[in-house]
Image 1 (cartoon, rainbow, N blue to C red):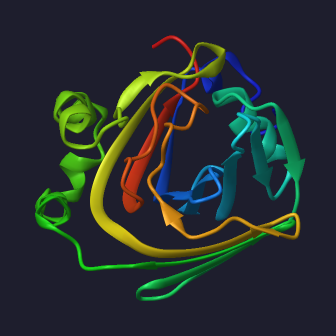
Image 2: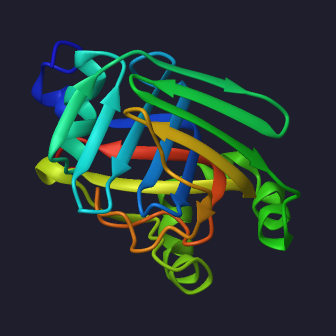
Length: 212
């Protein structure tokens, strides 16, 4: 890719600061939104969709971001489409090609309060995500905070907040997807899924592009 052409660049750790929202719908379609105000590619958002038949789609705003995400995760279909996200205090709206998504968040619980109390400098470190990987598997079914990504890459998720998602309204390709439901079965884009209970997670994601 044009922004990371050299061997030295391929060994870099790239950091993405933002939010991940994972929701299930009563139709069986599961949706994962990545909203990244700070990233090596500038601000952008992308959406991963897994249909009830198992097809995995990526909706990304540029060819550059689509190539990067596709090299890190696994998809059957990739579409480059405009992705617009409006984030309010407790209402988020997303338009990505033929997907229209709206969800509302509720009050954070004890785990969200605990994550917010972790100092930001500590929470951003891959060593911290390695420490929290086992508790995350126990407390949040399907979640892993570190693992092997595509193309020999390594990835760490450093959670800094967690809020429940209370309501979801989604239309994809002109078809309503129904109401909110657990993310079940877990999504299969990468080495781990999002929480089974729909949630919005404030997160720093670190991707190592090659051997350290």
